[in-house]
Amino acid sequence: MMPTHPYSWLIIITTFVVALAVTLFPVPVMLDPLRPDWVALVLIYWIIALPHRVGVGTAWLAGIFQDAATGTLLGQQAMGLAVVAYLVLLLHQRIRNYPVWQQAIIVMIFIALFRVIGAWVLGVIGRPADFSYWLPAVTSMLAWPLVFLLLRHIRRRYHVV
Image (cartoon, rainbow, N blue to C red):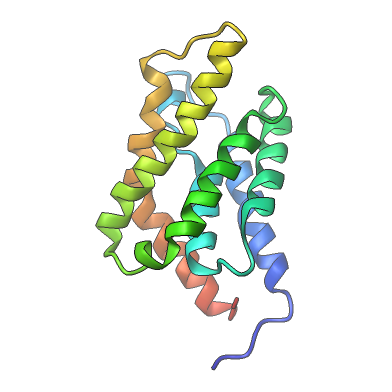
């Protein structure tokens, strides 16, 4: 068994901070609806890889920080990420056995569920979601293999267990 890196938590937190930074990185208005849900992708990866370290509490915290950083209704993203985290925790042993391309399809379903919860909240406050609101589910599916390979490399390189 490989030794645990003494700063494993710092490495996990850093990946979330980078995901939030990429989420906040300015892109042209035309491309903004195509932006994957980076924080959700990082969360799903860490739950699949290390369910004993990353869970619903981490999801809720990441969602609160994302809400504060993006200016959405406080708790909207947190609630969606917590629900997704719970479902990923229930299914993580099955998901990790699938090849990456099948995981990408499952990730798209989880991101779509995350977006459904967000659309519900938007509908409650009187701002219905349009078609472009759903595009991040598809782009997240396409980004999943890259996110998976990059985070797996980081996990193995720094012995995060």
